Image 1 (cartoon, one colour):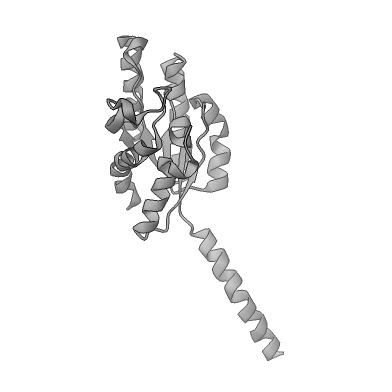
Image 2 (tube, helix red, strand yellow; image 1 turned 90 degrees about the vertical axis):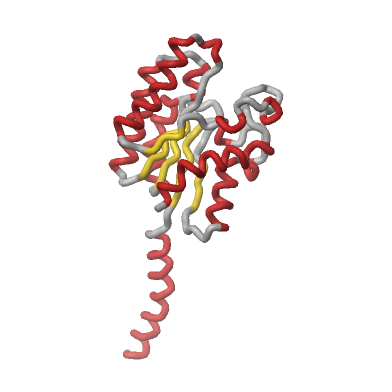
Length: 206
């Protein structure tokens, strides 16, 4: 009887260890559009994939999950965000949506409301947020572009979350850093984007 009990306990130890390790697993969820989904390049070359590699080299236990979808708007992101939080249970969310709202000229107020919803949902789950903004070309007019830029700054300030104002800042003036469409970064530009994101993300890792 005693030997049987000991044997069963020994079998349970690895199982309990596995469950415990799974329970404490920490994850970064990258939640964006084509600029984060690796559009036109291999997924392994995208900045979120490079982020995962960098975390491994630094000895971090954080795992990167990239749930970005090309063409995604903030409305589409809002619709699937609660399920993503439940599924992945991230410690940190890099929220990088809004570019497609801007390119389509959608109302800034609606974009800001969608982003605010996702930030609030993340905070309710105890998830830290890095809000990532984007800049629009000048042909959208000064009024719209100024309101668009301000939406990210105002939301980050109001919700007290970290902000990276412009995802593509380090490559914005380098035409060679973009694919033929002039919108999506090349594979060679991805490490520069990662370095830019890393500076804003690093304080959240602690």
